[in-house]
Amino acid sequence: MSENKILFNTGSFDEISGEIGNLATIEDSKLKLTPDNADSGLAKLVLTLVELIRKLVEKQAMRRVDGGSLTDEEIERLGETLMKLEMKMDELKKHFNLTDRDLNINLGPLGDLM
Amino acid sequence: MEKLIYAILSQDKNAGRLTSLLSGIKGMSSASLEEVCLDDITVVTSDVNKADIVASKSTALDFARVIETLSQQYTLLPMRFGSVMESAGAIKKMVERNRAEIVQNLRNVEGRYEFGLKIFCDSEKLMAELKEKAGNTITLQAPEPNVSVFRDYVNRKLSEHRLEEMLVHYVDAIIAEITATLTALNAVQKIKKMVSPAMIIDAVFLIEASLKDELVSSIAGLQEKYPSLNLMMTGPWPPYNFVDFTVK
Image (tube, rainbow over all chains, first blue to last red; front, side):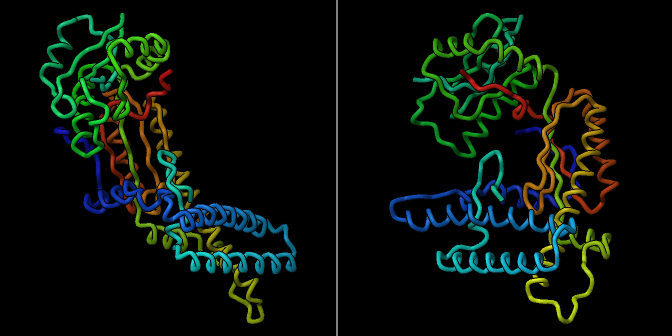
């Protein structure tokens, strides 16, 4: 475009264009299933969904703790469960050689899943 | 040869004006532009081999340049990159099938342009600021010596949760201010929040071109109020995000 389209900008142009560039680089967050990587591709998909559900459960649990509706004993049990879930997820990620960054799926115009 | 579609516009009463404008612009890969007309609607196209379309920066810019040039003189509906139909006859049939939606969408964007606003932050700095502002409401009481590892884990997670909630409220407050400004300017808006840790708001507005300066000054006011954020506003653009129909 010949015309300058930036009407207002207070940030460093390089930083901002870098950030937009990062958003545009969605290759990493695409699900790539091929005959050669069916195992790891499927593991990535399944673990992403498990991680999403784990985070939702954790969020809901924190809402309940914050709301003061749980007893000390219930909070204790909740802590143990959430901690074990997180540790199990870490184990699975390690086993399938995945990082936190891998556990996301780009949903196109809707953005990232998490 | 198929037809690559760039944009749909209301037919110009001055028949020669569009033809003359199109003769001065080149389409994707330097193709000549043509009009396909049906009653009061014109579709701007160029010949293309569907198999030859390559999605590259250069072809995307060629495509966008046509839409941009046309939008400076016409109210139009930009088409998605790579929209291809087999012939002019097929395009006419498509226009016939979708006439009501096309007319309605052209009416919605008439005399208006799209503007974009992206709000960036240094997420770590912002979180630290919010944490400081919140003081004791975020951090729970000092860990008791006998607290179990599970309780300690919940406490840590609760602090993170409260901080996240604060960030969401902070972003919601900014969105409320933007929305109030835009409502006063009679703008149509689409706002996404928390796009990434650094981009907390990504918004597009459809607004009358004559209100551009007013919009810029409102955004400057917002920037003054939130000096730790970086606001970037762009436009005017063709109404890329405000065409609301699926071709039947």
